[in-house]
Length: 115
Length: 111
Image (cartoon, rainbow over all chains, first blue to last red; front, side, top):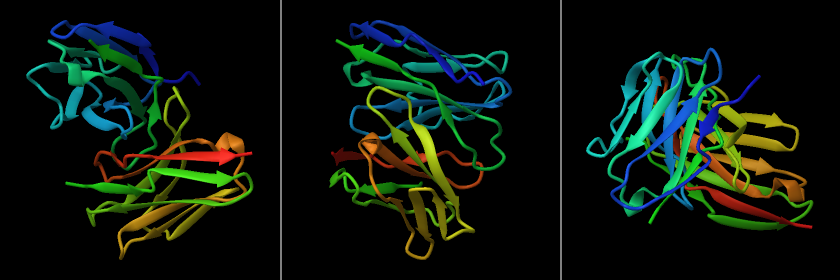
């Protein structure tokens, strides 16, 4: 089966610029996650969707980060404006359901460098 | 909320030796404990997981043990090989909860 697709693979921007990441989960997976992984740390959840509804966005810095999953499939994560501390790998993951603790399938991530 | 501590942060072993990585968690309601392997520049991939109704699970050279009373769980890799070199992350979650990851252990297996 096809895996979780993410683009772009790399992005370099200057601080205060905007950036958007795209994710296409595994077909049939209802739950989609965006994680931020800062170098040398474990992934930290930013937002979780169940179909097109938000389940948890408690750790999303809403003053600058936004995410949507309009049709319950693809998702975009946006940062506006970016700060130096946003430099990280942004990982998208999906799972079949969120009813029980489920295996997460991760994408390859987008490596963001903010200069 | 849940907090997951992982030790050691780096681990170097000789090929053929065993490696053990330990994690502790704070939320007694957590009931799912996966381990992910992340090779340099690649995506995290699940290698083994355990649920709170089981004390131990084994898959070939990899095993995970869980002590619910002490709130800690461990990953054991036997007969290590150079291709086991990677960063390993433990994680914990409760039902319908989000995975909280540890900070990772960089395992180096020397041939």
